[in-house]
Image (cartoon, rainbow, N blue to C red; front, side, top):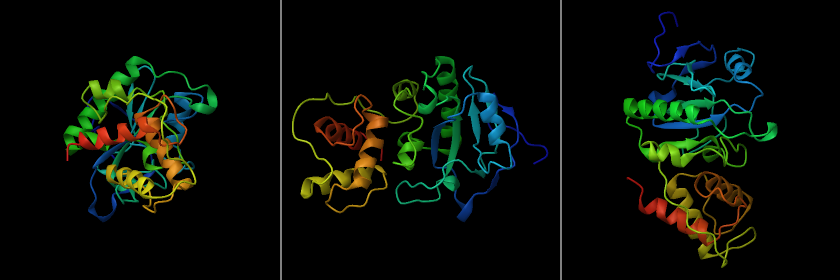
Length: 251
């Protein structure tokens, strides 16, 4: 990769060896956001560039807003792991991955600094513009790998991104008492819930049974779009928020 030029003009380049060609002539059609989940940004940057790790991302954004590019957008970084969206299972081949420095849930999970988020907004806007990525395709790692991943987590300021012109969001419906769908339930209402989640892109099988897979997908949806309560229970707030997202989806 001699002569490597950054796709993002503001980025420093530190080339990771952990990449390959995008498969099946796939091109970037989504952005997947992660947190690093490590004690320091320097350690995360070193790990993503270590051949022994067998992981990488296209970009890393430090707490101070400094951006490092490690893989060209035209190449396939190894960031998503086992994941899916709209039936695609090789998310690495059709996405751009961004690691955001934050130690994560197991190490205190601090707030994301404003200057870091400002840099993420600018970076995502440029990527979306270069590849014509639609707003609903700016996703969390937890969206494409529900149950397996929870990053960048419920503290990630999706509203700030949306107000900056990045991503898809609606105001979360208020949480009120009322009927809920939960593990063990079955019937037409559960099938409707699963159908709406699948229509938005989540990897959930439409069975009419509220099983473990459905619960973790509901949790992933709540973590991104209704983070005040993440319990895997499809209450009225969860259902109405999902309906609003689908109604406002720029198809």
